[in-house]
Length: 366
Image (cartoon, rainbow, N blue to C red; front, side, top):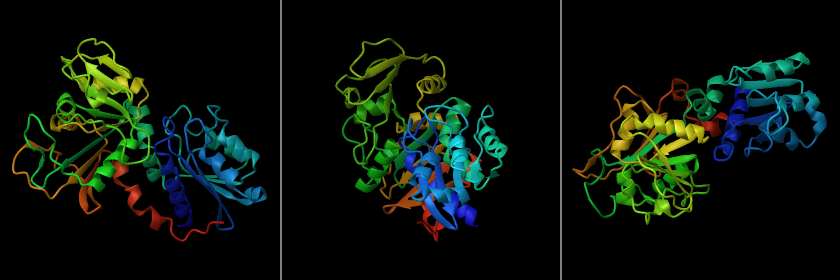
């Protein structure tokens, strides 16, 4: 179906904004005239032009807009925010037909942009690849619906189900390859924050920064109930904003903020509340087995990525355990197998990254 092909292209474009549009959602737009794409755009960066604006600006012959169709993954905005309403621009440019993937997910604004377009006689269609378009903005929806970050758990495990040897010092076992380690840094660049536990910080002394990929490093978060972590650790080098969740007040270090929580209560809801208040929409958990399992047992996760190494350890620290009742998708990158779990039904319908090129194949672009 032609309309679905154009909407797939919108989704493909939208994903380019993954690391830079938060707290806004990712959005893509395509303008089609006489069966050819004459303009494309996506929301590039928070505070800058929206997808519809960039698509309209990319059209070389503006006279074609009066007989074109604009495809957009999310309902055009109808209110003034950082930028003027996109619905108004579409009306101004006299684009006669608008095809929308999904409505704005929030009741207080849902449908207003659509109604504004209909009120001036535009032909508006809604619901093309609706589930896929909602899946695209799952981080945005999760943050505003559940008042917590979108949570991704990640670890590498041996073929016999261990994540490391039991040790009190020394370097961790290298289960990832240099290439799959690069994927870890890619994941870091795609998240607003990254979390580890006390033992991981103490034993591995990680930097938790983005080095083998392009992008900003996430806010670093570590648990340190008894303030036993040494200030000489990489986490406290001041290069990246760092939060430390602790039971007691602590003298500050440069670019390090100590946040007091009650360790006599469940700490995960407390942490999620603080991250929500700080506006951090996504969280990558790279901690040890105990911390990761606590998220799993609390059913507090949205995606899980597990790298399966062919290495056999025979003993050591057991890997976290996912329920056998939760389905997953098997993936392969750089010769390694990965298991990818999604928590929500609508996102299980779609693995966007793998097949977009064939779904958008055959499009004619001017």
